[in-house]
Length: 125
Image (cartoon, rainbow, N blue to C red; front, side, top):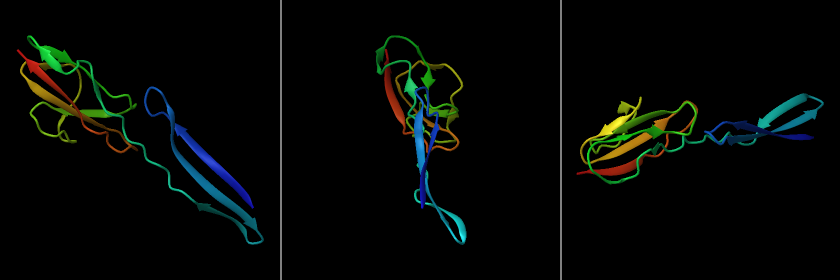
């Protein structure tokens, strides 16, 4: 019996790394070769978005950038206190915060589970 393990590696952001594994048993006998999958590939989650401006109290309007280290991820956000979803505003660039609010964001990418929701509270005086 020949036993083989296949390890699939892929980029999961800036750091890279392995995000799924699969192993197959190959058995060769008089009737031929069969392959049996022993384990389903693990699906990774998109990494949580991060904010360029730390939570806190600020004087006057502030600008915020949102980043997601998972390559190909699309970020959605809200500033109205609701939980962000796929139909929430899609992040495309600088967000101006001119009144006290909680900025919430999450990210999605093909082949990944969605990220968790990242939150940051800004108080504008």
